[in-house]
Length: 176
Image (cartoon, rainbow, N blue to C red; front, side, top):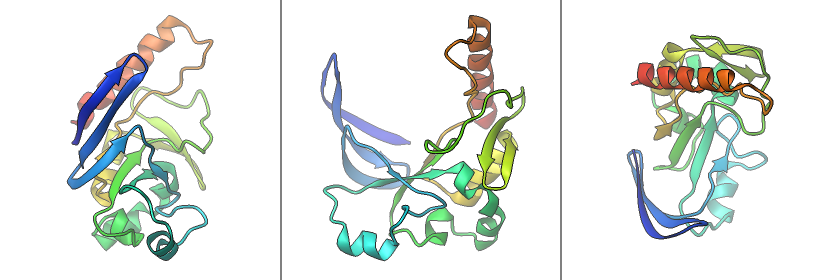
């Protein structure tokens, strides 16, 4: 669970602090962003360079993306210590498991009533609630996203939007 304390708010937004990110205690001012990772690593940086040369003003929150780590989940399951330890992230790192990769491709027309599609390097994979639970148990992230029906282009009908919301709520309830 994320604990967020609002320090001030206006019509434009809120300023606050995140005091807990899952099981990691931190003091993270907002607005902020997560550090993007591919397969558990910041692109073009080693963890040694990150820890020794980057002097950040606050403890970062790392975004793990399911499409970039999905093919290696069986190995991480056998490893048994979670994805952060598998990738040698700094100790007590705050991690978040995202279902979609913000830099990856998202194609329309592949979701169904029981699963959504993600695109890995090996191609399209269907993810249902059972696969998501297995992924979360293997990765051990501090926080996660539930499955969502993202297939709602701008020109879609209200019927399609209603269907997407209904599926997303069903995915959420099944995940709990």
